[in-house]
Structure formats: structure tokens, C-alpha cells
Length: 401
Image (tube, one colour):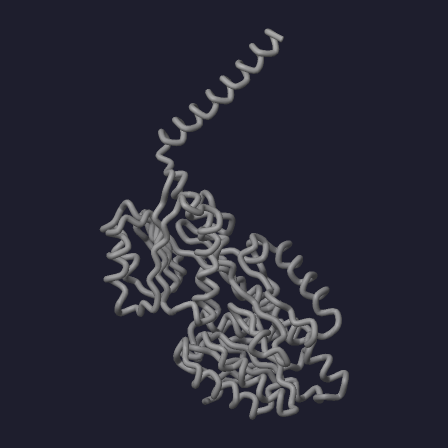
């Protein structure tokens, strides 16, 4: 019994010693027990983009609980960025995340060296010199756009097979905010995903020239539907396009909808097919981990590291399909989605099969700038910001709303 007592005491002392050493090492390395984390949103959670980004905040709260204080500023326009940014930094935020587009974040970062500034990328970061406490990141959304195109393509093929439309009626609509490379890259990947199933499908794109306007987005979708589009998608922030598709479907003409950032199955149950999204939490949570442990952010994040800029796709879980509506999707769609995801995972770091085909892309701002896609184009190869900015005139037409 005495020997058992001595062994038990020795074991307890060993465990106590381990925790003492761990505690001292943790603090010696500069690790923190508590963080203040800031989030600045360019809109509010009623819009799909900000709602999706806010899920990363929820993930931080779930993991760390009382170990973090979270401060949030919403509806911050680019021209009003300075005051809330300085306010959060002055309140002692250890790390601040911003989902908008503003060069001011990078410019102000050196004034607050004890704060890490993490911004969704808004330009080509390849070769750009940035402050040591400034970081950019973005999920490789074109991968999810391509697969959502496969979902749409299978539905269109089903409509052709069932005689609902003829092959030459395989027309797709896209409500787009602005003619930036981010938007062009996304909708090009979408139509190329569709054409991997329906080779003769074409697309009409209608710009709203704003990220968030219910009226303009719904009107643009109605224009596309009026032109005969049987599937509509969007890169804008409101439910306007989904409502336009749902109303048309309720009137007896089926028009299916593919959303981005947030499922539309509740607002458009008869027309919604699927949604794709960037999983921002795959960057935000490890970035908070890094600051908690006093480590370099990029050492904790799983993805394609470009200096202080990070991107990733399916291989690292940064993008996903959300809420495939099995009531509307064509038979076999889930299996096709799974197969496509595995293909992206196999091509991690160099996806060369999406932007590829017997096409020549043309820069809409400079007709002399063209790109031969027969050998493929690798998106996000050196930067997290999408750079594919070519219109494929053979299959894509830009119209006025």
C-alpha cells in the first residue's frame, strides 16, 4: 500500500511539473491567454456576403469563448474606413479582420505594430511590399463556381432530355456587380462548368454596377429571364435575383437559381438549385490561433502561401457547395459534385482544367489584350486575388439591364 501511495504521489507531482513547465514555456514564448479580436464589415449580416463572412466570427467565438472579446463594426464604406479602423486598434485589438476593399488598411497598419491586420484581398498582391503586420487572404472561389456550373449544367441537360427546352435554348444568365477580374473569373468558371455538361450552353451577363441593390439585381434578373435564360446566378449581395426566378417559376415557366455566399432555398424553394461559398473561417480561426500563440499567421494557415497573402480551394477546405436542393437538382448531381471536388483536390496548387478550351479571351477594356485558352489558364497561381479578366465572346455576351 505504501509503494502504491508513493507511486501515486510521484505521478501527481510529474503531472504538476508538466503543467508548470508548459505554463512557463507558453508565457516565455509570448503566448496570450486572452485576445481582443475586431471585425469590420463593409455591409451588415442581412446581405449574403457579410453574413457568410460573419460565420468566421461565430467560429472564433465557439472555439475560444471567454478567452476572446470580439468587437464588430458594420456598414463601413471605404471612404469611412479610417475612424472605425483606428477605433478598434486603439481599443487594443490584437487582430482585426476586414472584408471590404480599401488601401487604407495597409497604409495605417504600420501605425499600430501590436495589431495584426487581415484583409480580404482586393488586388494582385504578387510582389507587393506590405507592412509586417498586414496580411491578405481569399478563397479560390472559381473552383466552387465551376462545380455550381456542373450542377446547373446537369439541370439544363435534364430539361433538354425531357423536352422542356431545346438544345439551342441552353441560355444562362448572370447578375454581376462590376466588371472586375474577381467577378469575371467567377462567372467564366460558372459557364465553363456548365459547358462541361452542356457543350453548346451560352451566357448573358448583366451588370448592376453596385454590390448591393435589391431593385437593380431583381430587375437585371428579370431582363435575363425575359431573354430566355433558364438558369440564373449572381455575384451580388441581395435576394433580388432569387426572387425573380421564384416568381417566374410560380408563373409556370421554370427558371432555376444558383446562389453565392448563402443558400436561397428558403426564399426560393421552387427554383433554388445550390449555393457555393468561401469558407472564411478556414483562415480566420488559424490566424487567431497564431496570434494567441505568438506565431506568424502564415505558419498556422493551411493553403497556398504567397508571402503574407494566402489562398486555397477545395484541397484545404476553403470553398464548398452549400445546400444542394435535391428536389430540384437532376438525378446524379451529388455524385458529379463529389467527383469534381476530388479532381480539384488532386490538382492542388495548379488547377489548369477550368479556364481551358478552344477559346480566345478578350480583355473588355483593351481588345488587343487576348489570351489563348487552349493550353489553359491557372487562376490564383501567385496571388489570392482572381486575375482572369477576359471575356470569351464565343459563349459570353454582356447586355444592358
